[in-house]
Length: 192
Image (cartoon, rainbow, N blue to C red; front, side, top):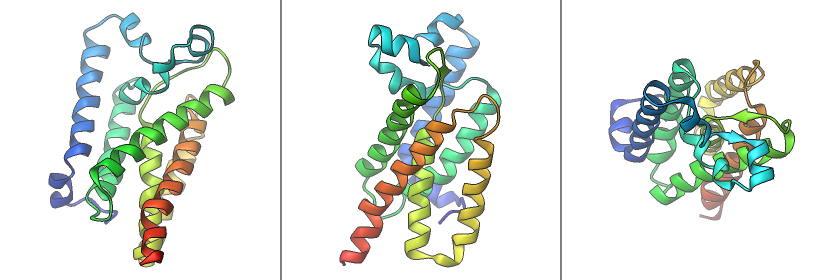
């Protein structure tokens, strides 16, 4: 469940599509176009507040600062995205809602909690939403895996405190994921 296997990856079409999209956007915007094109899509708090450039709360989910940033988010997206997307209790629509709403809410709270001149980008808030859902799945279905799941989460949270990391996107993405996990998964199981 929390471990990657080839069947889960093959069945996780939306996860693979998001990975492909992130890689292609990275290659196009970071390697071929001038930086001004990238800056039009990333979260710049000043631009959102002063110019009402609201798209900057969603588009940063698809952009990454460098190869290491892209690589770490791709691995996490494959791991947790495949776990959530291939779970039979989640529809593809549920998966997409979790991903995009977690990313949006993470960026929204970053807008209010980070300095006015902050620039932010990355899929981490959306991925932390998937991490939250995966944790609820483990708590609900297989508590024997709970130490492994908590180890992943502790690692990702500790990594969130490194310089240059948007901790608020991570925290609020995780909170949204936990909420969705409870509503879409744990609560449904308890009702049945």
